Amino acid sequence: MKRYVSFLITVFVINTNLFAAEAGMPQLDPTYWASQAFWLILVFTILYVSISKFYLPKIKENLDNRKNKIEEDLEYANKFKEQSEAKVKEYEHILENAKKEVSKIHFESKNNLSKEIQLKKATMEKEIEVEISKVQKEISELKKNSISTIQNISENISSKIIENISGDKLNESSIKAAVEEISKKNINKYL
Amino acid sequence: MASNPMQQFTVHRIGPEIKIAGIDLSFTNASLFMVISASIILLFLFMGSKEKKIIPNKIQLITEMFYTFVAKMISDTAGSKAKPYFPFIFSLFMFVLFCNMVGMLPYSFTVTSHIIVTLIMALFIFVAVTIIGFIKHGFKYLSIFVPSGVPTILLPLITIIEIISYLSRPVSLSVRLFANMMAGHTMLKVFGGFVVSLGVLGGWLPLSFSVALTGLEILVAFLQAYVFAILTCIYLNDALNLHH
Image 1 (cartoon, chains in turn blue, green):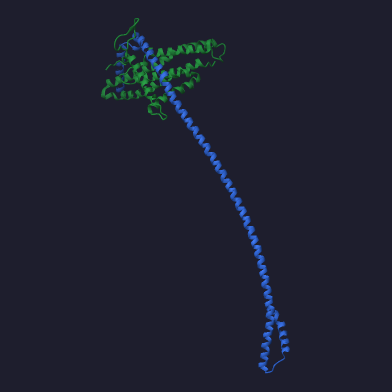
Image 2 (cartoon, rainbow over the protein chains, first blue to last red; image 1 turned 60 degrees about the vertical axis):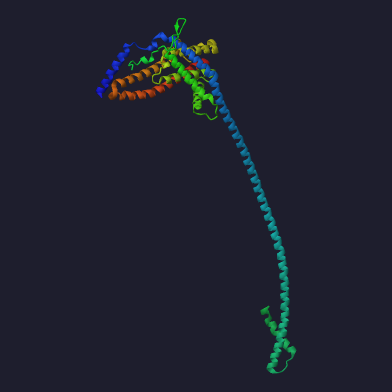
């Protein structure tokens, strides 16, 4: 490494000696200063004029166009957004109204139904009561009738039994009295 | 292969000698590379602004990037008042940038590595900025040399310093660009010379240096163009908006 560095240094010294001998910077030689100044001014003026009159307006116009287009598009987008928001609001409004109506209808129909049910219930109950009272009357009549028929039947049976057992005919009125007495005693069990 | 690293900066005449009123205005290799750089810029801008598309193609996108880059640079440093000077600063930036970049090509000539070229540009900027300052503010423009909020005892000294710094603007502006370009190209040449003289055995280290330096020089080429343009903007800002 040391040898390499010393080698580098010697080469550098030789090189610098070479160009130091050949007298410095060409930049400080005034031979072509006027020419360089002239051509610089000429070239730069042409460049400046063509850039400022021709290219920059073009680029600027294009950039402005793009900016305008983007702004326009954004405006459109905002418009559409507003429209869609209005539509959403409208939709929500309609939905709310519909919900209200539904609950109203629900309530009304419930009321109507319950009223009707009550009415029908009442009429039915009346009918049932009427029917029940009718039937009860019938039953009580039947019971009354049945008591007399039972008494008759039992009178007949008892007179026949007595006839068959004793061979004599008993007095009808006495049998009746006896049967009546027993039936009065026992009738309460069956009524 | 010339071993003198300064040989690349020599100017020589191309074609016939042109003499106007005893002054040599011949077309030289420096003039040739100025014309080449300007032509590349114009061709580039022509390609970039030929088609006006809403969605730009690559070259249009690059020209628009240059446009917005310079426009942003001006509005950031000099404000909206500097808008009329936008074409000049754009041309200046493009010219310096392309001269630097063309100079990076092998066997080419770097126009901006000559003090006379950068000095003329800097002097033009200096004179123009001074004239703009006096037109906009009249003699109040001289208040640029008298900063506010300085103690009265120090005021004469500060004013002298301000005047010197103002007058040295063209020198610093031109020497910065010229010295950067010259130093970079000299370094490249020296390392290139090392590669040749050290041969296959020892030349790899300076070669790798040379490659790295080329990358650095491309960065410097852009950076110096940017610095040149932004300093112009700052000087313009001083002339347009008096802050004192």
